[in-house]
Each structure stands twice: as structure tokens, then as C-alpha cells.
Length: 226
Image 1 (cartoon, rainbow, N blue to C red):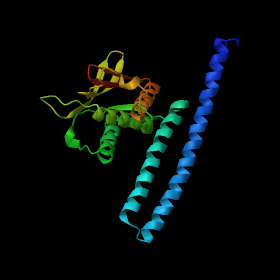
Image 2 (cartoon, rainbow, N blue to C red):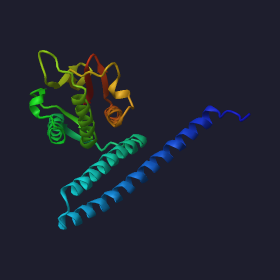
Image 3 (tube, one colour):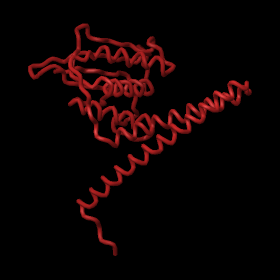
Image 4 (cartoon, one colour):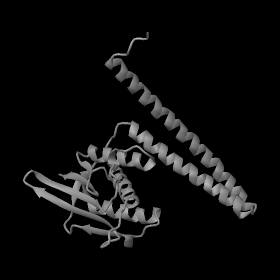
């Protein structure tokens, strides 16, 4: 009978497997980028030769599929690697949320009229990595729109940004309301690409010494303000 691995050996084996998996995923992403390059070149050639519209549509769908797959692989690579923050001081959190909402409008069929945003009037400044934090807030906002459950009184997704000040310090609180997660924690589910991005978003938040939680139809992010 083959002896069982000790806990130490088992942990080392899992770490090695994780590193190998990240490298394989990274290589796959590079291959996809090469395929996209060739597909784009083919599309330009076909456009010049006035090919039928359905053929051009097929190539465009192929490129879109490659982009989606590459984005998924990027999320897996990010999840498998240590998070390195590039913090800046005096980052305005309200500006980050404005960027997120603008991107949300461009990348989805939802307009700002479908989102009810309430933002504190005073500046909300902190020491953050603006790129990673914006990516996390965008992933959460996209998922909140997908899980949005309109009520009889309000059909809009509700997003609020405020400051919770106590004797221990100030905390920025961002909440997405009216979210129906069907009994699951959106931050701790790995079913599908959106769930992986939500888990990655939670890791980005936690790297800032914050927290990302879900309770009673409310997604909440808390970030310490220094």
C-alpha cells in the first residue's frame, strides 16, 4: 500500500501544483493573444476584399470569444499570484467610483438611470492602489447588477458611498443593495467566471486591510481611511 503523504509534504505538493497551474494558465493566455493577432490580421484582409457580412461577423465573434477567454485566464493568474499593492496617498474614493460607473455604462446594457447612487458630500481620501481597487469595485458592481432584484418600490440598483467615523478611526463604506444571491455568498463562490472575479475582488479589498461581506441582500465593502 502506498504510504500517505505527511501534511508538510502534502502542503508542498499543493504549492508546487499551484505554481505550475499559474504558469500553464499564463502560457495559455499568451497563445490566445497570438490567435487574436492572427484573427485580427485575417479580419483586416477580409474587410479589404469585401467579404460577405456573415463571414466578417464570424471573425468578430471569434475575436470577442478570445478576448473573454483571455480575461478569464488573467483573473486566474491574478488569483494564483501574491497581490502586490502600488498604493498612493490621498486617493479620492469618489473619483474611483465615478470611473467604475462610467466603465459600467460602457461595458453593459445598463445605463446610469438603472442605478441609484448616493455619495457623501465630503471628500473620501485614503491610501489605496487605485488600479486594483477600481478593478475590484467594478467586478462587484457588475455582479451586483447581475444579481439585482427589483422591489415593488424601487427598480434601481442602489449603491451608496459614505464614511463611518468612530473613535478608532474612519472607514469608507460602499454598499450595493437589493442583491439576490439565492442563499450563496457571492464573495466565496467559484461557480463561473463572475464568481472567480468576485473572490479576486475580495482579495484586493482584504489586501487594503478592508473587508468584503454579504448579508441580507446587501454587498458591503469597508476600507480603512488613513
